[in-house]
Amino acid sequence: MDEPQSVPDDAPDGPSDGAGRRSGLKNPARTVRSLGAATLILEALVLLLAIQPIRLVGGDLSGTAIGVIVALAVLAVTLSGMMRRPWAWHVATVLQGLLMLSGFLHWSLGVLGFMFGLVWVYVLHVRRVILS
Image (cartoon, rainbow, N blue to C red):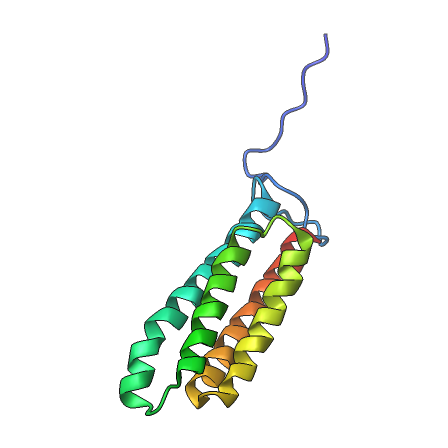
């Protein structure tokens, strides 16, 4: 009678990372989508909470700038629910560029765009490492 082969207790679950190591994630695609969605939700929250401090400390914030901030926040929240679709990752990358360009409306929006752009580059790096 053949005995079933045993798996070592220290063998992690999940796909290999290409170097023979495993990520340890049961559902890497869901984890990456959650990271992207959480980043976009955080970005939307920061954008909306930044309106009043920018108005009080930074000087003039026009109605156009406030409208752009709200539109970008709505787009970020909408995209966070669509991270299953591959095109949503591309649109979210464009969102980071639009936020950087909004720095022409107020310098602090450009700073926020740059910071979230760096965060998004890291999210894309993590996505590439985990899913490849």
